[in-house]
Amino acid sequence: MKDTKVCRRCELEKNCSEFYRDAYTPDSRNHRCKECCSTLNKEGYYRRKADGVNKYQKSKKEDPEGTVRYHRERHLKKKFGITEADYLDLLEEQMYCCKICNKHESENSANRNLAVDHNHETGEIRGLLCDPCNRGLGLFKDNPLVMQKALDYLNTEGHYGRE
Image (cartoon, rainbow, N blue to C red; front, top):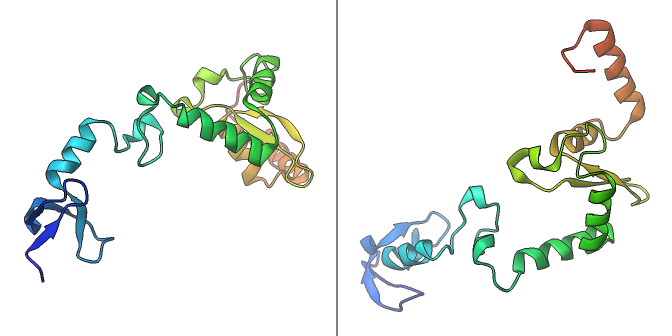
């Protein structure tokens, strides 16, 4: 096994101990040296999970080109056929609350935007939902009969929900 490796960033040949371990590379060492990784980390290059940004994307605060906004707009257009303005109109129409539980957008888990709920067969948008309500519908496969059975079960067996 080679004792040295060339860093892809600084292009210096260094001892392998100067590279972090990486099981996904052929030589089990990162492509960048520890020093370069540290520099990139300080610049905000690597993801901090709380930021909710892509792995190699700068944080939202350091995003002068608007790439986060661009990808969001592209996603909305491609998946639901709506623009960011359409989304904001829906949000305002629902008074910034989930269409099912009326929980305000600011209370949504991990400060995420409300999800666009749509009919999977027709593609028609039904409204904006918080993460738990959107997941709940998905887990019940949008089947009203199964959801009604679940409601009957809770009414019969007891529940802790609020009125």
